Image (cartoon, rainbow, N blue to C red):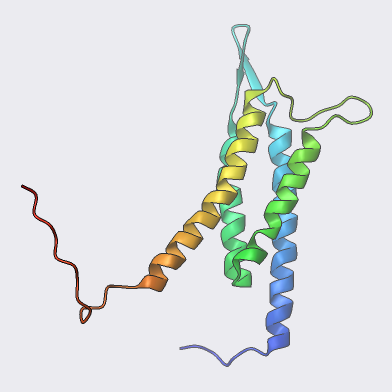
Length: 153
């Protein structure tokens, strides 16, 4: 059973807080993903990069998109954290005035993190839109005439 309806002001406040939390989560996770891109181990003198950042990017970006969609009820508001994520990742990929850079071009983990992180945001939107169209169309109406299937000869 559903509880009493919430007033419109409380609903608006919850949406705003949900967007702010989503944006902050996206910015913090992007920062940590950028910090994890140079993570590596050295085995018998060979450097082996650990692709932890791309895994975190995929899981958390989809999770933050889902969180934003559930809390706000709108796809557009759920995409605002993606903007924060891209801003932080873009800043991490640029050199500072001192010459420091978090995501270097010679680090394949950083490039894969950017690619898979962006694809995770896109996958969330695609799944939501595709599911929405499928649910909107619903099952076929049995009262409508259907076109007969052609037989294969």
